[in-house]
Length: 163
Image (cartoon, rainbow, N blue to C red; front, side, top):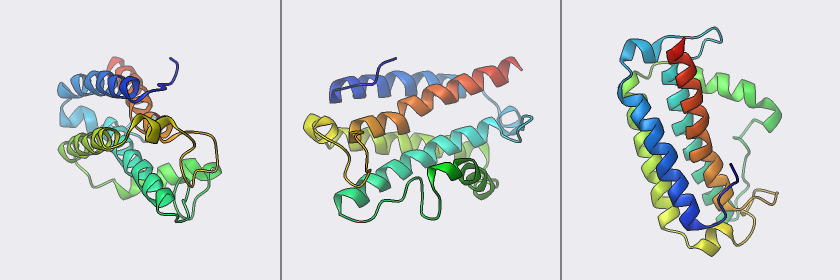
């Protein structure tokens, strides 16, 4: 699926992918959500992870626009440390229950929707995101943090439910 190139396309893919994920999550009970797979990851972990990464994106954008140093993916980590970062995140989020993870995702999604609504098409797609040190626009980063993550989470969850 090609990446969105306009605010309108981004809003449409956001709604489509979130609605599909949310519908999938609606029928999952706590026991199923909290059950770990062979990689010691649960559906709850996956949902909380997606919510967290939306916050990372919004922080990256905010820091970049403010002219601050932007840490990708987070301070003390490099992209090559992503597995360690995600394992550390799972440990940090280990006390979350299923309802809290669902709530986090709902809140993060609304923050991303608000972020997109608050920016013009040119803000989102007129040039590289400040501080990112690459050619990705804020809109492309937003899509990676939201709809792309929603799609991969839904794929993982469907596979787990088939189990």
